[in-house]
Length: 87
Image (cartoon, rainbow, N blue to C red; front, side, top):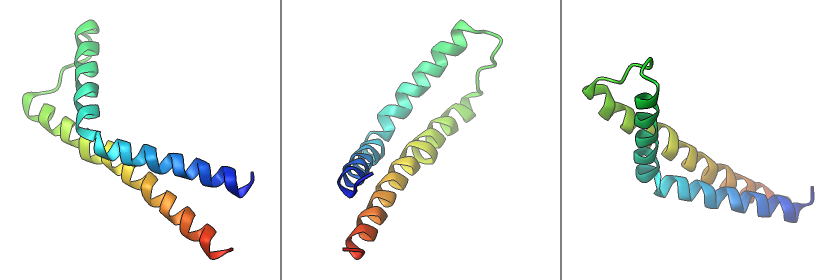
């Protein structure tokens, strides 16, 4: 791949990462609503206890969406830094 296409790819990854980081709360709430609906349709899955329900939302918010968003942004910055050094 040429450097232009790689730069465009990593630019898109940076935008996706920033979006994930910014909208992590809304994505976590939507995922929680989806999993609750799935558990209602399939009663053989046990629902989480009320204490763990709050913890599950925080894990999704911080542990997955924000971490993944920050990782994508940092990888994009590292790519731009490495490509600027080799010019």
